[in-house]
Image 1 (cartoon, rainbow, N blue to C red):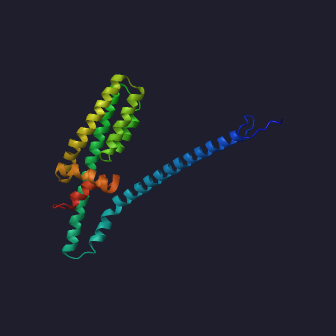
Image 2: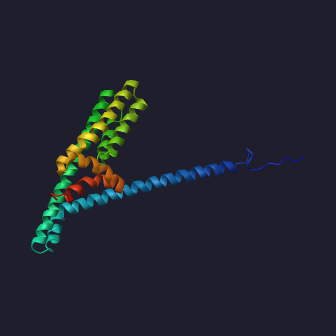
Image 3: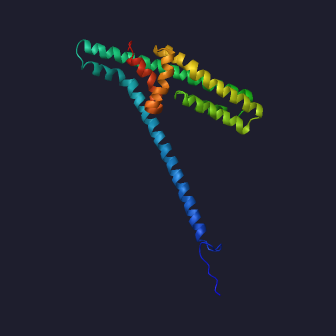
Length: 222
């Protein structure tokens, strides 16, 4: 009887190998394409942000003066005062956020150095950047350091980093950040503590970032 051999069951038939290689190559190409597109988008965003910052610093006062001139009498003064108030609030909020992010990154780097863990500098820099995202950013940054301890550290390193991660996020998120933000924008810490998660529910990460300065600008003193 003649032997029936199908491409799907024949080991010697190379078609299934080609098919599998083609699928794997297609998936890898799609992943690389998405990665390149993401990096390109990030680079374009950073470039546009840098250019916009440059032009705002150079011509911002002229542009604001042109805006206020369109309002006559007391209206122009009111708009000018409101604008100065908004700039002051946002400046104080950004400085406070930067200080908290720097404190978290430096303290995390010190703990990692004392434990002898690797990747101190890149993780500290990433933690500083993530620190500008309220609550979530600090948690992600400390989690990265904890994962490094889990991967290469001893049992003692893991326990110490785990305790520090837990304590740091609870203390900074529930006590230090509300007090610092409250002082910077003249809001009660309890209001700050409620406003950030409420902003996250309404508008995601951007809502968490903008909730406190918006409340401060729109408040009775704004």
